[in-house]
Length: 402
Image 1 (cartoon, one colour):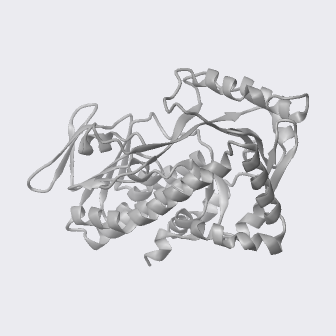
Image 2: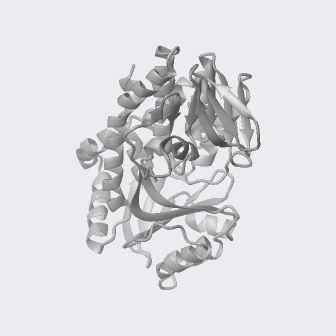
Image 3: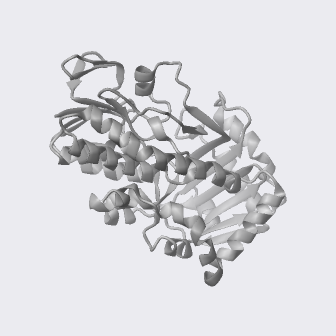
């Protein structure tokens, strides 16, 4: 059996590993020039942790853990908005949690699939057309010329999926904009790194938040998110970032100095600046015949849900599991994968929409409520009262299916 996977991100690479393990010949096509290094920090737990454990990758990933001990929330003038101790947060999920850069997770997956002979990864490639033949085979027309034939084609090509457009048509509008824009970039400046120290510093105001945290190599990673009524990506993201966050520069304290320098160091357009809208993908169908969608292409939960990477790995595992059960009938496996996962995805998306309002509060009273919640978590005997709120984040599609 042969599969063509469009997209060499977290979902596509995870699926490639599992299918190769089951004896499939795997071809991965990725439109980017090479592995993506840019990305923001992700809390890695739940389904993703369980899949990584079964792949034997947890220890390798833990070595790449982002080295901060607490998340500290500050106002523009330096006023405290609360703190979350990372060790306390990890206890809620029995220690099965760590923070890693998304790019580092992808790099580990690239490394492991590169060692498997029946996986071939081709960069600067994607598909222009997909045809399912009467005999059951699928023909993929490659952008650079030529064709590839396979028993299954998987579109794991992200929230703006080309494969989704090819099988569902341009009229499909599954994108649900959540009302935020976000960006991320790396900063290499020792003085700024020393000011942030061993913490994740979040500087907050109604409708926006700027986060900085240390990386293993002495750099800082930034992650910014703000409310935007307009979903369209600006022509000049650098200018938009500098204008949007300028009002966080207040007074002469450390926070003002930090924000000012972070905005000065925002990369020029075309350099390593990640900028996108915060959206979800809601689809009633995830496949058409022997062409199936995976990850953000059909089930983006948004970074506000905090489970995108974990669910990318979890959904890849579930699809591989269904293909293992119905190897002679990939179309049936695709339908079973959809029916098995969609209820979980809908729940996570709902949680993501709710949590977004508290991750980036738009009113001062919401900031106050959030501060009170953080204060509760600082007391272990009170923090466990929040366990019911944490419970959904401990669910795993992998564990539930064993």
